[in-house]
Image (tube, rainbow, N blue to C red; front, top):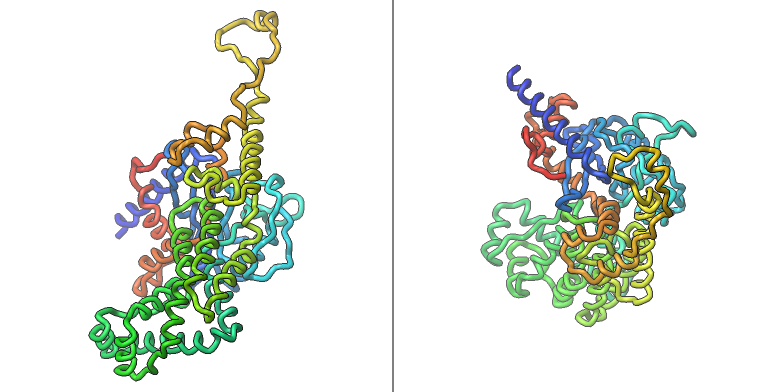
Length: 491
C-alpha cells in the first residue's frame, strides 16, 4: 500500500507539473464552476478551458473538486479558488448555472457594477467590458482587495443550457397552463404519460408488457434535464394510437384521447428546435456558438407555426419571447458578438438584418484596430546589426509610414475567406480576438461531467476517503492526458 500511494503521489505531481507547463503557454483561460452533493458531502468543482494558439483546438482540465461546508449561500465566492497555476490576468470568464448563490456571489465580488433588480432566473444587464480587470482565479480568492477588503471574481457568464432548460420548463409550462386552448389537454396528456413512466419503471412485469406491445422501451425523464422529458414524450408519441391505448389498457392507465395524442405530436414539433440547440450548446463548442444558435433557434421555432393547430399555435411565439427576455443581455453583448463573428464558420452569415451585419462588422474592425494599437507604438525601425551608439545617433530618420494593410483590409479579407477554422492563422489580429472571446464555453456542462466522473470515484464503498485524497484521485482521472511524462497536448 505505501508503494501504491507513493506512485499515485508521483503521478499527481507529474500531472500538476505538465498542466502548469501547458498553462504557461496560453494567454486566455476560462472556468466553469458548480456544486455537487454526494454521500451527504458538498463539493465545489472547477474546470479550466483554453484554446491552443498553434492548433486552435479546445483543451480542458479540472482545477479543483473541493469540499465545502455549511449553507450554499453567496459566500461560496470565497471557495472558487485553486492552487497556483500561473493564471494571473488570464481568466476571461467563469460560467455557472443560474442558481441564486452563484448569481449573488458574482455580484458581490464583481469589480464591475451590475444591476441588482433581477431574479434568480433572469439575465444580467450588459456591462462595459472595456473597464473589466481580468483577475487571477487563484490569487483573487486567497487575498483581499487592498481598496475595499473584498474578494474579486472574474466576469460571470450564465450557463446558456440552464437558461434554455428554464425556458423549456417554466416559461412553456406557464404559457400552456394559462392558455384556454391547451390548459386541460396539456395537463391530462402529461398526467397519462407520467402514469405510463411510473408503471414501467416500478414494475418488471409492466416493463415487459411495454416491450411486448410496442416493441420498444419507454424512456423515463429525469428531474434535472428537460431534454430527457422531451425524449420521453417523443417516444410515447411515436407509438401508434391503437398500440398505445392497448398498452394503457393492459397497464391500467386511462387511454389517450385523439386530442391528447395530437397534443403530444404538436408539443414535440414545437419543442424540437430547443432540443437541437441544447445538444449544440452542451457540446464542446466555443462561446461564439451561442448567438448564432439563438438566432437560428428563434427562426426555426417560428417556422413550425404552420404545422400547429389552434391548440398550440401560440407556443412558438411564447418560446421566442422567452428567449428574447432571458437572453436580453446577451443578444447585443459586445463579447458575444465578437466571439461569433471571429468564428470562421459563422462570420456574419447568421445575421439576417443588413444594419446589424454592418454594426457587427464595424465592431470587429474597431477591435482589430485596438488589438494592433500596441504594436503601432513600438519603434519604427530597430537595427539588428551591432552598430555603435554614436553611429545610431547619427542616423536619425523619420518614423516609417504605417503598414498599408489596415484593420479594414484584414476584416474584409477575413470575411471573404474560407470558413475553415485554420484560416485564422492568416489573420493575426482576428486570431487574437478569436482566442480571447471564444475561450469561455457557453454552458457549464463540463463541470457537471466532472461530477459524473466523481460518482465513479466516490463510490459507497469508498465514501470514507479523505477530502484531499478524493480530490487528487478525481483530478488525476479527469486530467489523465497530463499524467504522462510527455503529455499528449499542444499549447
